[in-house]
Length: 381
Image (cartoon, rainbow, N blue to C red):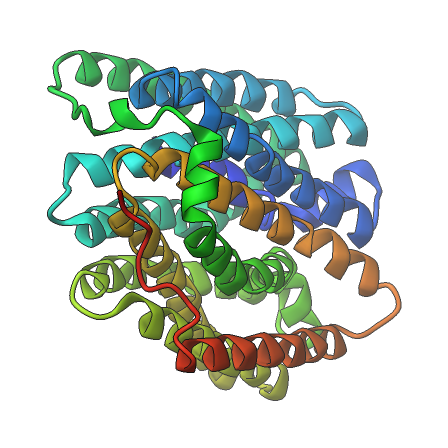
């Protein structure tokens, strides 16, 4: 299930050029389509947190499978850019609700190994990000530009099958009762706002930059002289190196202090962002791309473990939803902003400016940590 919901969310990146050709639109418009997918992933997160105070987690996960099935089918038959945007939004909607329900459920299934469980779940999610450009490339090679419809239809069929399988498995599984005490969204906000705000501060702007970077990564690398096929392959590399990042960092997050780990990863991402702007040539771009993918994808299991391992049963899903919903709204607009700016400024200038902003944010976070003002764990009892 996590493979499919993330596949639906990232599939618009390798489809940027085919969609531009199919609908005769520019970068700004296609960037907006990608933003709608991520905005759809952002908006249901806090409402889903409230829903989880009333509905079991696995029921919500099953419902997201149904939503993804319908949304992918709807998108596959889109004849206008407006309908395509609505379909992208609905596909994102399924992913946002899924992660809010499934991540707490995974952490509660394995309370003694939260980082490891989140790492495995994230590895499956990241595998989808690796598969998306490869699958899109294979389909387009056989069918041409119109193959984007087959991509969407395949997602819908696979989602329907996976939802049925998950329903059968859930009926046979002895599910945890940890979430039954989580019944007050606002109470979780009042108690856990320091750790929620810390998580948003660490991932919000970083996710904004990453969203804008990866959705235009093939297009950006073409401006550096790479052929279109090679540029799409680089997108696969940046996602592929994220697979071991989830696996390794999930386990590492169970063993080292959370906050220093996250700040170190953030510093690594800023370094990689400046590096990709500075380098030219296939070998140098490949090397930086591989490191960039590993570093940025290490941040996600580190942050999820920080939140889910720290939060008590009575606040876990509610506080996680508040954190996740807020940070996703911040980062969802990254691709539309980059698409709009690219009409006036070079990609290198855009990403350099973003890097300077991240350096400033990292400096503030390091200062707060040195003053012991960043919470290292959630409030309890």
